[in-house]
Amino acid sequence: MEIVIDRLRKSIIKYGINLYGWVVLMNHYHILFSLPRGKLLSSLTRFINGGSAHELNRLDNLAGPKVWWNYWDNCIRGEKDFFTRLNYIHHNPVKHGYAKANREYPYSSYNWYREKFGVEYINDLEMSYPVIDFTDIN
Image (cartoon, rainbow, N blue to C red; front, side, top):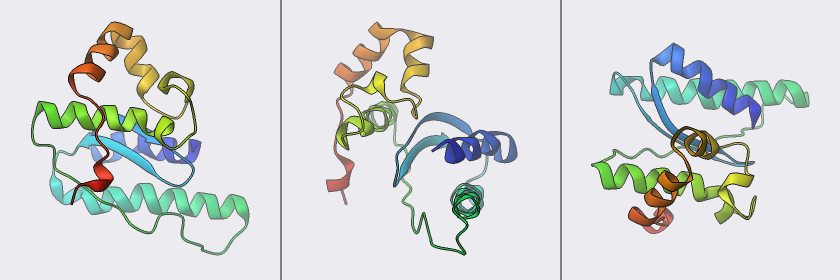
Protein backbone atom coordinates (compact mmCIF):
# COMPACT_ATOMS: atom_id res chain seq x y z
CA MET A 1 0.00 0.00 0.00
CA GLU A 2 2.92 2.30 0.72
CA ILE A 3 4.21 1.68 -2.81
CA VAL A 4 0.94 2.89 -4.35
CA ILE A 5 0.87 5.90 -2.02
CA ASP A 6 4.43 6.73 -3.07
CA ARG A 7 3.40 6.57 -6.75
CA LEU A 8 0.47 8.90 -5.97
CA ARG A 9 2.81 11.40 -4.33
CA LYS A 10 5.19 11.25 -7.29
CA SER A 11 2.30 11.70 -9.74
CA ILE A 12 1.44 15.06 -8.15
CA ILE A 13 4.80 16.38 -9.30
CA LYS A 14 5.18 14.38 -12.52
CA TYR A 15 1.67 15.05 -13.90
CA GLY A 16 0.61 18.16 -12.01
CA ILE A 17 -2.47 16.48 -10.60
CA ASN A 18 -4.56 17.96 -7.82
CA LEU A 19 -5.17 15.05 -5.46
CA TYR A 20 -8.37 15.55 -3.45
CA GLY A 21 -8.93 12.15 -1.89
CA TRP A 22 -7.52 8.63 -1.93
CA VAL A 23 -7.62 5.23 -0.32
CA VAL A 24 -5.43 2.20 -0.95
CA LEU A 25 -6.65 -1.30 -0.09
CA MET A 26 -5.02 -4.68 -0.66
CA ASN A 27 -6.61 -5.31 -4.05
CA HIS A 28 -7.71 -1.89 -5.29
CA TYR A 29 -7.49 1.82 -4.72
CA HIS A 30 -9.59 4.91 -5.36
CA ILE A 31 -8.33 8.38 -6.15
CA LEU A 32 -10.19 11.65 -6.63
CA PHE A 33 -8.10 14.09 -8.63
CA SER A 34 -7.98 16.54 -11.47
CA LEU A 35 -5.45 16.66 -14.28
CA PRO A 36 -4.23 19.76 -16.08
CA ARG A 37 -4.89 17.92 -19.39
CA GLY A 38 -7.28 14.99 -19.81
CA LYS A 39 -4.95 13.36 -22.32
CA LEU A 40 -2.59 12.57 -19.42
CA LEU A 41 -5.03 10.06 -17.89
CA SER A 42 -3.70 6.94 -19.61
CA SER A 43 -0.10 7.93 -18.90
CA LEU A 44 -0.93 8.65 -15.25
CA THR A 45 -2.67 5.28 -14.93
CA ARG A 46 0.34 3.47 -16.41
CA PHE A 47 2.62 5.39 -14.04
CA ILE A 48 0.65 4.39 -10.94
CA ASN A 49 -0.47 0.89 -11.96
CA GLY A 50 2.58 -0.15 -13.95
CA GLY A 51 5.10 1.42 -11.61
CA SER A 52 3.59 -0.05 -8.46
CA ALA A 53 3.13 -3.48 -10.10
CA HIS A 54 6.77 -3.48 -11.23
CA GLU A 55 7.96 -2.58 -7.73
CA LEU A 56 5.74 -5.23 -6.09
CA ASN A 57 6.98 -7.88 -8.51
CA ARG A 58 10.57 -6.88 -7.77
CA LEU A 59 9.98 -7.15 -4.01
CA ASP A 60 8.27 -10.54 -4.41
CA ASN A 61 10.91 -11.70 -6.91
CA LEU A 62 8.22 -12.46 -9.50
CA ALA A 63 8.45 -12.12 -13.24
CA GLY A 64 5.23 -10.39 -14.09
CA PRO A 65 1.90 -11.32 -12.54
CA LYS A 66 -0.54 -8.50 -12.98
CA VAL A 67 -1.55 -6.59 -9.87
CA TRP A 68 -3.84 -4.02 -11.49
CA TRP A 69 -5.48 -5.22 -14.69
CA ASN A 70 -8.06 -2.53 -15.31
CA TYR A 71 -9.39 0.83 -14.18
CA TRP A 72 -12.51 2.93 -14.39
CA ASP A 73 -12.76 6.66 -14.55
CA ASN A 74 -15.65 9.00 -14.02
CA CYS A 75 -16.06 12.68 -14.64
CA ILE A 76 -17.21 14.67 -11.60
CA ARG A 77 -20.36 16.59 -12.42
CA GLY A 78 -20.60 19.10 -9.59
CA GLU A 79 -20.22 19.68 -5.87
CA LYS A 80 -22.64 16.96 -4.78
CA ASP A 81 -20.94 14.37 -7.00
CA PHE A 82 -17.49 15.45 -5.75
CA PHE A 83 -18.27 15.18 -2.03
CA THR A 84 -20.36 12.01 -2.38
CA ARG A 85 -17.42 10.32 -4.09
CA LEU A 86 -14.98 11.68 -1.52
CA ASN A 87 -17.13 10.18 1.24
CA TYR A 88 -17.31 6.90 -0.69
CA ILE A 89 -13.52 6.82 -0.92
CA HIS A 90 -13.12 7.51 2.78
CA HIS A 91 -15.74 4.91 3.71
CA ASN A 92 -14.23 2.19 1.49
CA PRO A 93 -12.06 0.56 4.21
CA VAL A 94 -15.16 0.18 6.39
CA LYS A 95 -17.21 -1.16 3.47
CA HIS A 96 -14.60 -3.85 2.80
CA GLY A 97 -14.01 -4.74 6.45
CA TYR A 98 -10.51 -3.27 6.85
CA ALA A 99 -11.63 -1.01 9.70
CA LYS A 100 -14.67 -0.34 11.87
CA ALA A 101 -14.32 3.42 11.46
CA ASN A 102 -12.74 5.62 8.78
CA ARG A 103 -10.28 7.15 11.26
CA GLU A 104 -8.80 3.71 12.05
CA TYR A 105 -7.49 3.12 8.53
CA PRO A 106 -4.05 4.66 7.84
CA TYR A 107 -3.94 4.31 4.02
CA SER A 108 -6.47 7.01 3.23
CA SER A 109 -6.77 10.78 3.03
CA TYR A 110 -9.55 10.69 5.65
CA ASN A 111 -7.33 11.59 8.62
CA TRP A 112 -5.70 14.42 6.67
CA TYR A 113 -9.18 15.94 6.15
CA ARG A 114 -10.02 15.33 9.79
CA GLU A 115 -6.85 17.07 11.02
CA LYS A 116 -7.03 19.95 8.54
CA PHE A 117 -10.76 20.74 8.74
CA GLY A 118 -11.93 19.09 11.97
CA VAL A 119 -14.43 16.42 12.96
CA GLU A 120 -17.39 18.80 12.64
CA TYR A 121 -16.56 19.45 8.98
CA ILE A 122 -16.22 15.72 8.28
CA ASN A 123 -19.51 14.96 10.04
CA ASP A 124 -21.25 17.71 8.06
CA LEU A 125 -19.91 16.30 4.77
CA GLU A 126 -21.07 12.80 5.69
CA MET A 127 -24.56 14.07 6.56
CA SER A 128 -24.86 16.36 3.53
CA TYR A 129 -23.44 13.90 1.01
CA PRO A 130 -24.23 10.34 2.15
CA VAL A 131 -22.21 7.43 0.84
CA ILE A 132 -23.58 5.77 -2.29
CA ASP A 133 -22.46 2.36 -3.47
CA PHE A 134 -21.27 3.29 -6.96
CA THR A 135 -20.74 -0.36 -7.93
CA ASP A 136 -24.46 -0.57 -8.72
CA ILE A 137 -24.43 2.45 -11.06
CA ASN A 138 -23.92 1.80 -14.79
